[in-house]
Length: 455
Image 1: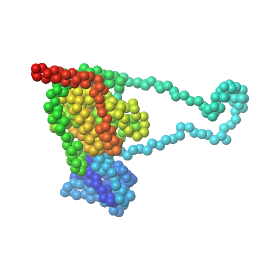
Image 2: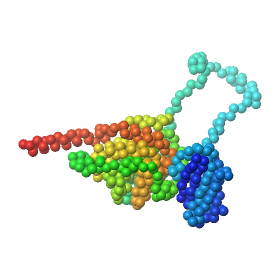
Image 3: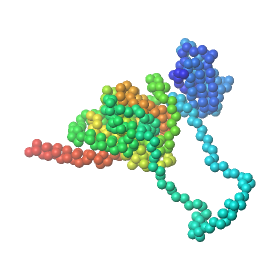
Image 4: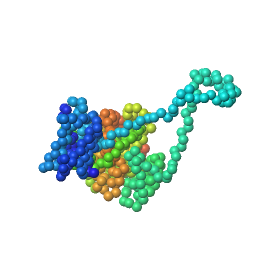
């Protein structure tokens, strides 16, 4: 079946779905409405939409087909007149399957006492048992409740040497024999398929330390004329104040995304928001240094600056347990430090103040909401999909992120995350490369040179 191009609109009383279905027989159209779920089938097209509120099919509902334009227009009545249907422009969210209700059944069945027969032998054996007086006293103190202790955690059971990685650890097998390809950003080699999270982080830190070049950093620090030009640039997605609307190309890209439903825990959801920060950081660094005009090196830059790509090492918060997603200073610093370190060790322009400006760009993009974030992700996806090697990172990360952002991300949480990013400050000492000492030494050398010129 083919998913047709479509768009949705609404009036006070109805939802209007417009589908592009050229060369069909109008008499063969089948429409089914089941509360929030609407399905439209006409060979060879099939469209299933899951709306946020219920619809009904009544006398005011209609379906019209225009053979000259090829558009089928379906009008369905809102069950509650005047109710506003949110996110009608988020096509991936509408296409997502309806969540299945999880029915819990009792694990213990209590039998009625009258069905039990007294066992004389068991009664005699019970009466013969003696209980220590200390046990009785302890039980009385505990209100006759059984004592409980927290059991020791069991070690993880590994049934295979292979590990999973990528979005929600859903993927594997993409990096087999990686050293035999032209993948220059893979820092784990062929061991990418067997390293656990701790080993990946260790390898990432080793690689960053090995690539750090103090002389390169000092050269950009002292001769920062071009860096200053980069700092003045403003991202068009941030400066754009017009009403948001996806382009036809963006809608076509969204329709090509996988159809998935994600059952993420609260901890996994929290980590996804943090991973999104690192991905957007790499994106805005490339946008700022290329003036939003991707170059042949853009895929390399984005992948290299993203720890989740190069070392399969996304951020994981040890500060969050459960409840509302409130982002602390410590976890945001822990999330940003790897991105800062990589921006100072790998690309052409290595500047701490440039990294700070990229952090601010990420904050502004997050505050503009998931539609703007989705537009950025689609641009990342376009860059990676057109690369012969790095397209795999679109498969294991970006595709799923696009679907998740449209269907699951919360604008209020994104806005809060953006505000918290604006407030948090990453200090140079946390980079662990002695940046302040290097800068102080450079200033001393400059002053000595100035004094000798005066003499």
